[in-house]
Length: 360
Image 1: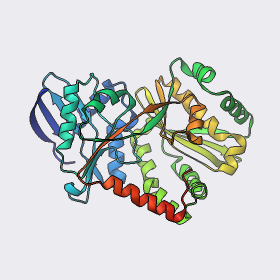
Image 2: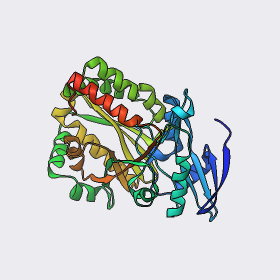
Image 3: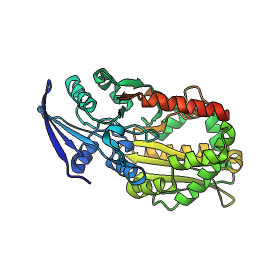
Image 4: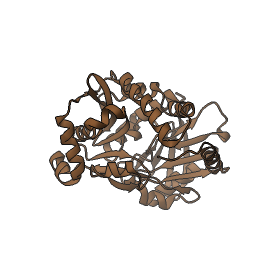
C-alpha cells in the first residue's frame, strides 16, 4: 500500500485536510460509530475488490475544521494511466459505497467532497449512495450525472416473530412450511468450507440463466465467471470471517440451493445466491434459506436485511417483496470526461440485439 498523501484545502466550509488512502484505523473507527455502515462500506470490502480485480485503494479521509471526519471508500483502476482510468465507490457489481460518517454531514461539507472528486484526473468518477444519505449528498452533486438504482430491504424491527407475522407474505410462509416438511437439510458455514459447493451451484445457475436470457452458454460462462470468479468468494469468506455466512440446502446429499449473507454491525446483506432448480424447487429450498438467514440476522440484533437490487416489476423484485422487502432509492452519481458509459451501453445493446438476448 502506498504511503498516504495529504492535501490541505481552503473551502467555504473552512480548512479541510484530505488524506488518501484513508488510514485504516480511522476508517474502522468511523465505520464502528456510523450505525448505517453497510458490509460493502468496510475496508474488508475494498481489500476483496483489490485482491480479486484490477483495482487499488483510492479511499479518501476528509477532516473538517469543525472536527467532523468522513471516509469515502474509493477504488481506482490499476494498469492504466489515471486519466484513462476510473475511481469509483463502487465499480459495477460491487454494490453500495458512499461516505462513512457518524455525524450528520452539512451541505457545505458534502459540496467539498464532490468538488474534490470533480478535480480528480480519472476518466470516470462515481459514487453510489446508500438510501439514508441521498438527500444531503444529492443536493451537493452539481456537475455529476444521476444514474438511478434501487435496493430492497427488510425492516427487522420487532424481531423475527414480527417479521414472520407482519412482513412475510402468506404464500411465502406456506412455501417455507412446505420446505420444513420436505426432505431437505440446511447448514450454515462461517469458515469458507462450503465455497466449492456454492460454486458447484453457481455453475449450474449460469446454464439456467443463459437459457432464460437466450445467451450463448460460452458467452454466459465467460461473462459470469469474469464477474464473479471462485477466488472472489474465497477472499470475502476469509476476510469477513464470522461476518460471512454461506447457507446451504442439501437434498439427498446433493447441494440444492445456497446463499451468501454478509454482516457488519446492525446490517445484514444478501450478497449472492445460486441453486440447482431441479432439486431446489420441488422442496422450496430457497424460501427456507432466506427465512433462516433473516431469522439469523434478527438474532444478531441487525436492524435491516438488504436483499440487493433487482429490476422494478420483475419476478425477482416480487419474490423479495414477499419477504417484506421494501424498495429504497440508492442513486449513483457519475462524472465523466468522455461519455464512456453511454458508449458501453450502446455496445451492450448492440450485442444483445445480435444474440437476441432477453433480460430475465
